[in-house]
Length: 137
Image (cartoon, rainbow, N blue to C red):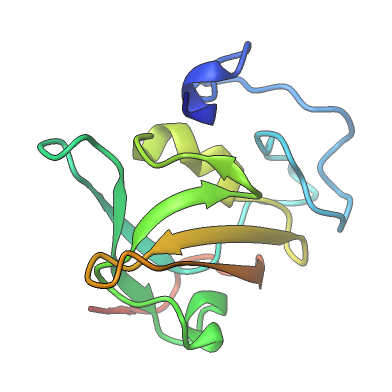
């Protein structure tokens, strides 16, 4: 069963609660709670939701200069399979956003599947993207 469906608090809870104030630079394994001192930032990936083939999120674009682009591994067409080793292959965007977003400088591990080869691979990225540049498809 997918992680987004198993969380007791419901990962699409509009008011997720995690310990601390969000100012830590260590990886946040739960939903991120925004604070004035540490706004949420991402890794520069634009996803589209697949509502017809069992759900899930696919990379549509990667923002120029973003942490995702700097890896040179995240490309349009990849399916998001896991966040920090938690299965999210059928989750939707509102479910996963609090887990991809986090304080600047914290890390997140995303696992993708290539639709052509069916190979899976993981990429560790440092959050630090606020969405101020254009994305490349």
